[in-house]
Image (cartoon, rainbow, N blue to C red; front, side, top):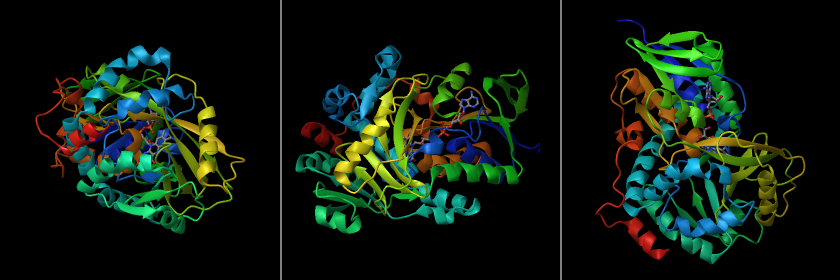
Amino acid sequence: MSETTVIVVGAGIIGLCVAYHARKGGASVTIVDRDPAGDKASFGNAGGIAVTEVLPASVPGLWKKVPKWLLDPLGPLSMRMTHAPQLLPWLWRFAEAGSPSEVERISGALAALNHRVYADLVPLFADIGLSDELHRNGALTVYESGKGWQADTLEWEAKRRLGIDVRQLSGDQARELEPALGPLVKSAILTPQWSHVSDPKRVVDSLRSWLAANGATLIAAQVSHIAPSPEGGTVTLADGSVLNASKIVVAAGAWSAELSRQLGEHALLESERGYNTTIAAPQIALNRTMIFAERKFVATPLSIGLRIGGAAEFGGLRATPNFARSKALIELAKAYLPGLDGHGGVVWSGHRPATPDTLPVISRSATHAHILYAFGHGHLGLTQGPTTGKLIGDLLFGRDPPIPLGPYSIERFSAAKGIIGPRASHFQLLAAQR
Ligand SMILES: Cc1cc2nc3c(=O)[nH]c(=O)nc-3n(C[C@H](O)[C@H](O)[C@H](O)COP(=O)(O)OP(=O)(O)OC[C@H]3O[C@@H](n4cnc5c(N)ncnc54)[C@H](O)[C@@H]3O)c2cc1C
């Protein structure tokens, strides 16, 4: 039998986890990235292993909150008007994804992935020498008002039904766990299954080192074209050179739809830009990820400092970042964490690869036998990377994947969609409540 040769396009967390599993399976692996060690979503994210995030971004009633968010120039959501026409098909599908039946379907598919995460992540971290850099301390979601808490109760209930451990705490109980929290916090939810890493950059750096030490080739180059061939596929680089392989995996983060389009496959994928600031000496200590529910931002205690971030900005891949957002989040955080010193913070932003239904694409090409896709992980790429790598490995080597991959297929973007299914569900209650 001839050797499997795999080209992975993209050296973010997803491409590297795919390359890891391809190499583990015995393939000859080449990873191509225009800037393999460079700044990207996988490098500066919040470091959360957010397995408890099993509901889609689009939920019933969300639209009522959107105008208020959009009117606040530094609020949690923004859109650049010049990008609006391009965004419309994505927004349309996002709205469809918020119907009760779709939320139920999507939640099941997210839970199926997230329930696998530790089974795939723990051995991978052990292999790349990062076992000590996974902190399984849970996350604390805090509320400053009864109204905010009430608005989320059905979502917490839905998460419980999907197997998430959800523990309700008073403000004082939250302060016992996290003494840095001030009196603004009135209640909280502890989700023990969440964990965080010491530094997401260490994860991608360690994966690259492992791959280099284990025979994979990393090429720093822009991929300008991908094409199928009878034996596999070809990748053309910006300097005109051509690479051949028996399998090609597109894992180019928020840029992946540009490449899938060349192959005749349409994907609804947008950059959802997020922002953060990392403060090396914040003068407070946190033990776990904090999620500030009403204000939609998070704080993670990383080994390099306290990282405070959030925001969802839809402006396309070429818009310049607005770092006033990073700074605004520090001011918000001080209200909850009165001892916080924000001086010396390093600002950052990155492009989350966002699909409208919150599900990643983990898929064979519908038309080209030797092309595969691994992108669109939105807010959960660090969390789902090792599992995506394992599942793509199964597809590469003809093994049966442990979960059905239908919900993550690239074909879903071209298939006609029914908007509201016939089943009454928990999510219809949510719709009725809002
Ligand atoms: C502010 C913020 C906070 C986040 N927090 C979390 C969190 O706590 N937990 C979590 O699980 N996830 C989090 N995420 C999401 C996570 O970071 C992303 O889902 C993940 O990093 C996406 O990884 P990726 O490999 O798909 O893309 P990327 O990391 O963007 O990598 C894609 C790579 O493809 C390369 N590339 C693209 N096109 C080409 C081309 N044509 N030729 C060559 N190379 C190309 C790029 O150079 C890039 O290196 C966060 C994201 C942001 C922005």
